[in-house]
Length: 143
View 1 (cartoon, rainbow, N blue to C red):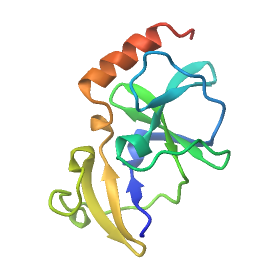
View 2 (view 1 turned 90 degrees about the vertical axis):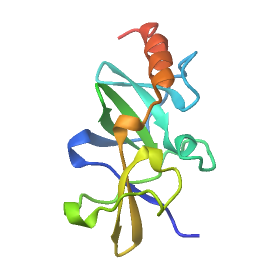
View 3 (view 1 turned 120 degrees about the horizontal axis):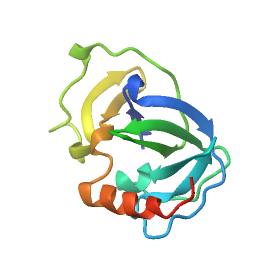
View 4 (view 1 turned 180 degrees about the vertical axis):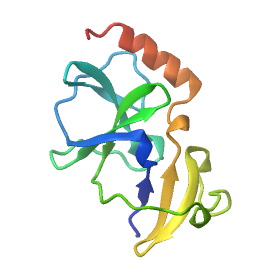
């Protein structure tokens, strides 16, 4: 089975860090694995496997967290690994509809030497009810 590759717009990404300890966040949406403390900032950790309907697994020390902005919220995205920053010309991006399922989370699709790359739209990362539940859960965490 071909490995799925996802991309983000570089302007949404702050940095990539190695997996760190995660604190559970009671009453958070199911896709939130917990929170991490990054230099005094409490950041929710999102399980992209769960969001994309992929098989879930426990976090590994070899995993990475992509710190990115999803709208006004800074989040950490649990990923198996990261590759590189590549320029993609707008004409190389196709609409995702009809190419792959689960297009509600995608801005588009492009192709590179390894195959298809699904470009994620972080604006759709959390459903409105999940965003509200996450905000309520985060209100109870110390800064």
